[in-house]
Amino acid sequence: MIKSKFFRAGVCSIAMALALVGCASEPTSNGEATDETGQGVEAEGGGDLVVAVLSDATSLDPHTSSDVPSGNVQSNIYQTLVKYNTDMELEPLLAEEWTPVEEDVWEFKLREDVYFHDGSEFNAEVVKANVERILDETTASPRAILFEIVEEINVVDDHTIQFKTEQPFAPLPAHMAHYASSMISKEVIDGDNEAVENGEQPGTYVNENPIGTGFFKFDNWQPGDHLVLDNFEDYWGENAKVDKVTFRVVPEDLTRIAELETGSAHIIDPVQPSDLSRVENMAGTEAYVRNAASITYLGFNMEKEPFDNKLVRQAIAMTLDKEAMLNGILDGTGEAAIGPINDTNFGFSEEVDAIERDVEGAKELLAEAGYENGFNTTIWTNDNRERIDIAELTQASLAEIGIDVDIQVVEWGAYLDATTAGEHDMFILGLSLGTGDADYPMHMLFHSDSVGSGNRVFMQDEAFDQMLYEARIEQDEDTRLQMYVEATNYLNEESPMAFLYHPSHIMGVGEGVEGFWSDASGVYQLQDVTIQKK
Image (cartoon, rainbow, N blue to C red; front, side, top):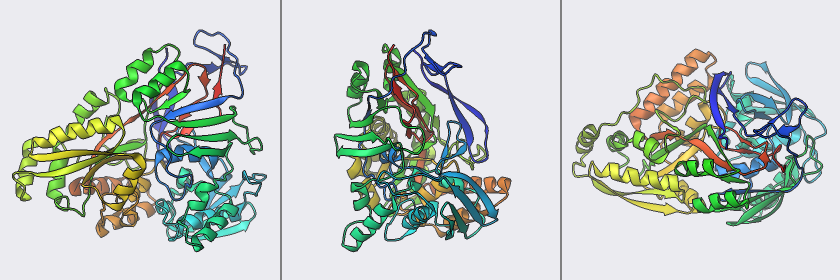
């Protein structure tokens, strides 16, 4: 029984390197796989890989969705220009190379002979159409912030494209690695545009025709039950090893574990920290654990009383017991958050003015705000046992300062819709920090342009927006780092949310499954997965 472990390596240009060690089977020098005893195992091609997941995808359109369950499916259908490897270093994917040809111009050289699942060709015009779609206000993409600094998109030739930015912008290649920048067939984009003109919502046509360049292609989807992808045999690169992947929705934590134990599922996600030891001790299974480029937070609706008062928000943030969350609920996994990012992202520093737990100080702040006797409110969470446990612990903590909390558990899709619409008081949610740079998560969570999408706290602060703009265009790395320290201090002062913890990704991997890994955002990497037998 071997538990996958992680360690931190040196700093790369935009992120702290991350690597995984201790897999149960490693390739030998001649490429033959061996098990932990050194015995040879036969790596079988084919088969139906079953992944049992807590939450279903909400959409198959990467440009109009913003949740990881959707991204996990999308990233196997579509591809981006560049990608991260296991060490969070950028590597070529649909682009072979990228160069800053001028201070404010990035040039990407694209692969040739790449075709979409519908047979259409991938080229520079396709890239232009995709980025323009993300930026189009009609699309209302929650990920438009990734490219809003792009001023012009110029097709140099069939396989060369240039992006001119308003100011020099070093993180652009990293933004091109985020699955939200996935390339969709231009014919599908044209179809979606036509559907929008006929009154359909943006993304409806894409969701029904998810055509990418990936190693899997869409087969069928029964929402709330399962989604199936087939091996795309005409894939431009090395084919996936399994015949198909079935994402099966299994909301109950213990049912997912039982399916892993019986072999009904090959991979399960998530494994709750309290169930980690059970998976570790089951015969023939592994716990896959890695540190995460992710933040879990308690958000406040700043447009509703009393959360429009920062003293109230500060008081709540000062009351929460993060150590109890880490030790009592996460079983020692994860790490306490002092801001929105951790050391997987450029912009992190321990030299920030973190909020410390101080119950008496919180009571004083509440009294100063006019709520000496507390108030009644609600916390929303989705149907995730870890988040429900966090909500209950928060409920108990806030009772110490007179705040009476009712917990409401909402199904995942409805939860996203309702928090986007601002129907909540407080809510528990997370964000994957998928670009390796503070620019993305800070824009996504707090910028005025993101209100109603990633910005579910409804923060609209011109001064902070300006801080983010100045940080994103600063070219000196040391100066830029200090600007993000100041931005984090500003957030801790304003407290639009309470930063709880950076979780570990914990998944279960069944016997005979090899080649699986997850990136730091928790997105599954399935191309090289095989189902083996001895």
